Image 1 (cartoon, chains in turn green, red):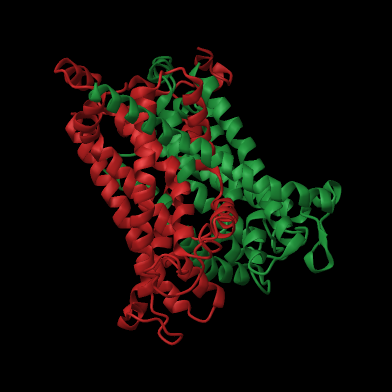
Image 2: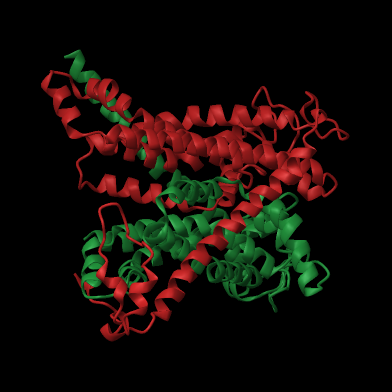
Length: 285
Length: 318
């Protein structure tokens, strides 16, 4: 009798643990949105989303420049990072000599574990001077620099997810293609890679999510001016860095507007994650 | 099945190629070099595109590797000479910018965050894997929210922690607020790794345990969790790496004060936050390099641990 009571009690305890993650998401929504939505309404949704004029001391809160900044950096990171990442994955699966595989994959997982602030340090002390020298600009901080840094940061995500997508392809299609007379290289690029393309697409989506959410590395190298980006070298401020830069002294509506920034970020990531998980579910079926 | 259809015209793929006579050997992908003589004797044109693709792959992978290696080497080269004993003195002053308080805070944070998050995460994994019916709505909801949590940017966690722990619960800017925020942040990570670890335990173990008369609870604690310990431990290492590297979620919850926060209610900076502060001030670049080396070495240690565990598990399987 005591035995069964303990069993069922523990079942409830475990279920409670499982409910924690639901509770956390609910709490995050509960604390972000009641602060964010009134602020957006007070500023006016049209001005908040479609004005690029961010001047908190004059009560003007338009976040378009920051949204554009985040998107530019994500795009730049994808353009630079995805080709190299996919090539690395192809290399790991189809070309890598057995002896090289372990060090290479260890290096990739190490790259994923390096803290973003260390990336920021690398960007600040290596990439920024490099761009200054190459392009002759005054500061060197800006879209190009942050995109390169973000491309480095999303590389491990792209590589590991693309690798598992490639490994999941049916080995029979490789054999079939070889049996029909195609070479190894052509089979890999024309048969195996197209077969894995949906997995690679989800890798890209996840990489974009990481690039948009990245804060501490970007803050070091982005230049942080809240203006609409005009060239590859112009400084940008993203949604994430906008929060960190001003939260320490913000009060009143300004503070609420920053929380609204966080809420916008949350919604963007949420939509991308839902897309990602719906794709995964579709693939499973 | 649709995958089987090639997406380019067959003519383009299947160019006559002597290489195709080779086959996939059990030892792996056979990329042995072909003998030059046998080629030249045949009148088949060389496959330039195939060669181009091969070179492209090797150079792409080489480039990726080079970038990574250059970053690690740069950090080691600039940081190792900057490691001085004054950086490890017990008290922080504006002259020595000691990182010792930050190291102590980091240790406290790692231990306590895991203490909060590990039972919850492992418990949730046990429920999802061992108790809940496979197709239930609750399981779907939990895994959806866990996925969502793992995708949320750390700065949003920072905002959330600031609103809930610092202001609503009145904990103030303190290490405790930071610890609670981070426990939410690593919860999905612990959950996922423990779930995978439990899934890897063969069903025969469960059946054997039940057949011997053990209840569900005893099976979980005496059979499954010990079996899954390796996987869970590798999850702990992963989570510790995440905690050590986290800075955006901590700035507005745990603060940036460079003092050891022994009583938890006072603010304290971890190593990453300390480094952010040094970089932001811009006066202590060599000291920042030293901190980055320490952070890098910690990460290498965590990764190496995971790697060893994983290869040991692989060996155990074979």
